[in-house]
Image 1 (tube, rainbow, N blue to C red):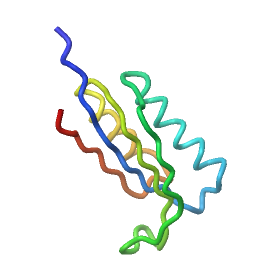
Image 2: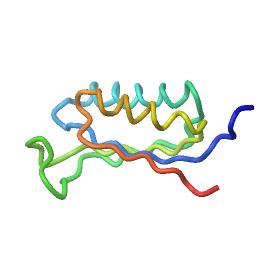
Image 3: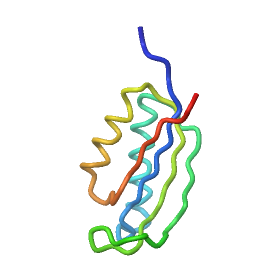
Image 4: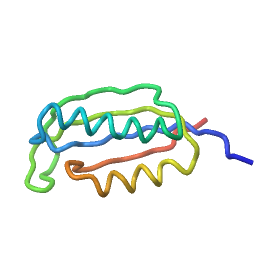
Length: 98
């Protein structure tokens, strides 16, 4: 029996030096991963912001927030892909209370 879908939120910080097209392609890539096993409910483009501390010699990052519903197995796969994707400075995935 399949586990019921859960609500999640994720924030990714993308290297701002990538350029607009590459940032859009990166966001689309992660939306496609989520949609392969879930539903994207909301995408908020928070834009370029100053980082609280330097990450990989970057002082700014491009923030994107995604709210989604998916099976409990998806966040582990999403995190794995975040970690191997060039251009992702940091990411966070949290499960929301039902």
